[in-house]
Length: 255
Ligand SMILES: [Zn+2]
Image (tube, rainbow, N blue to C red; front, top):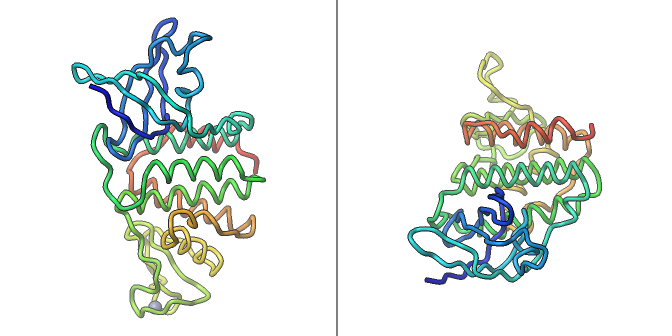
């Protein structure tokens, strides 16, 4: 039986001389693992559409609970990512995170399209002009993806008095709440981050803006650094794991 899905390749494992398994991120079926036969042959029609980060319309054949790629029509490739080791490492982290957090062969929940979100993340990484901007793209990915997984922080204001603005806003990553400098218990022993207005504004944009606007913010390089620490902590605490691709990205990124 044939099925057609728009999707992006988020994983690829070679099998033998000419075949490989690919993991395709789709909105309808989450992650689909499919065999791409003959994909490594130089004259294969699948050559351009089954590589990592290929965004294509896939026609899949399903027999005995296994999918194989029948044909694929490329929509967009993010091959520019491959020309920059830092961007490639970040894209690989995004792929690993999405692959781990998305169920296999079942529709993802939530109103935002996961495929669109992933395509925007790769596009923004590809277009990033410097390390500080790349750090912002990473932060936007981590925080928005947390929301898409159902882990919404409450960034509207202080969870005690409700004030929306304060020179010192404390963010508690374990509960996802904000508490202002007047209400914060200075003896508090749990984890927290002090957010400047600039960082809080960026986080509010990431969480509350429409999907295509979520990555559109700019902060100073110094703020980008702290923003990245906050979102990474929040995302890893929520997903309760580490990612080898993230460790690699952090080991090679330019400071
Ligand atoms: Zn307060």
